[in-house]
Length: 189
Image 1: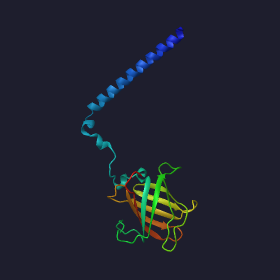
Image 2: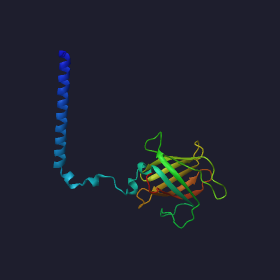
Image 3: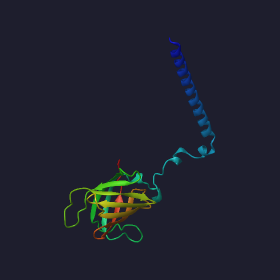
Image 4: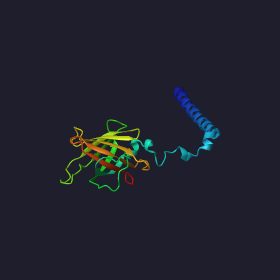
């Protein structure tokens, strides 16, 4: 065998041996540091997992991805911020929220247009896009992809675990105000 080739093989073997030796030392040192740490002994692993039921200010954009059911009511949200369950539902729809393709921390949603009491559901898709900041969800609705046709403002409910939002939808052309409740159904989405 060529001397140069033998030298390269020896260097590669030595480097591989030293790399494996360094990884083992690192693993052993890291394990001993973790074992000696008083915080690791006092904190069970489950305590570091995200809460199963986030508080309203802990809800993030990630909690909103997926399918939502929305119920609309006439009039504004009551002063206490909680929708009146006894009020008449005027419309229902579903929204699919995904990550906005142009803004990583923003949402984009799609829903079918809402029908009013006197006409059938129009064809097409209504687009929603917006952000969740400091517990406030603000969405712009566009029925044609060009102009804002309504603005949605909502907050997660106190005991909703990030799966129930309540707020108001204001139509841009008429300033009509509707209360809505958005609920994330159970399931894989």
